[in-house]
Length: 443
Ligand code: SF4
Image (cartoon, rainbow, N blue to C red; front, side):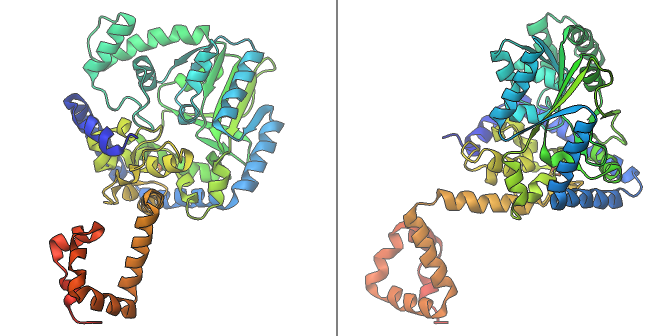
């Protein structure tokens, strides 16, 4: 079975990747720090945003009911689904009902999570990603390597190369020229599309609307140009009201990209005319269970800014693909463990130095280190053989109970116990320490 140890080693073998990560994460961290320093009251705004997320954790059932009811009353067709498979089928049903063959998409981690693109392509539907970074990784047949910056692992000349190889681009590696080429190409895809698929950053219970943040204008085009708009999202995106939303909108762009404000904040309040439809495929499994679990609920307070990744010293060196999961970086560790318990890399919880920089930068105070330690605890106890578990239980008993320890000392001081020092876990212990601990004074 693949392990993080191996995927990380593999990543370290690529000097180009190292250079891209080094440059792009450094720029991202510096921009964020500068913006935080220049934003008066950021710390207080972050505390308020954290409170808004805790409100969601406490009241999510009521808020969700409220959101669904109000969204439906606005003409939004809501499809609650329990699993990734159901979500894919729901989207396919909607598209097939409208005879859709060409779709444009704006960046959405939930659609990555449910594996939507391969399912649509298998059904003969052409899918074009329209966020520049997401489109580049689509051309390369890769996954996004970062929650908000999908092509963070690439350098300009690599993007120039992929445009040249796949689309005959003959221009320079100047970002403006690359972006202008992408714009020309994608505009045609927009004009041909019969449906647009987006995610949603927030679902506002107070109004029943969706909020979608973006910087490139592509999400606006995706949701407004075709007559059919399908948003795929998940239950933890719900927020109580516009007050909470305002607090979150203050910190999310600062943490994500070091911007004062996202370039476009789209409010979708229902179909804009009678010949249009807005559908929301709302994924709740297994999230609703985890939201009830005090050990794990905090994972879903995350607003997917991606700051913890670019700030993480492990991510900065190996990049997102080494996590072998849709979600990478510190938040990717508990999310992968909870969403794909059988597929996540078994040693993913060790992709962390416990330095706590992620916690320091998280705009909504997700306790990432505690969550990662919890994943470590669970994966370690899952991986232990019954023999080793028995051994550790005995060891714990000996180290915590003076009478048992006294008995063990007496036993281990006898010459008959000497051979033990070369046995199993004893070998590692006695290589450095001998049996001196057991030879000392009894407690
Ligand atoms: S855990 Fe915090 S820092 Fe990391 S992506 Fe989520 S909100 Fe951002």
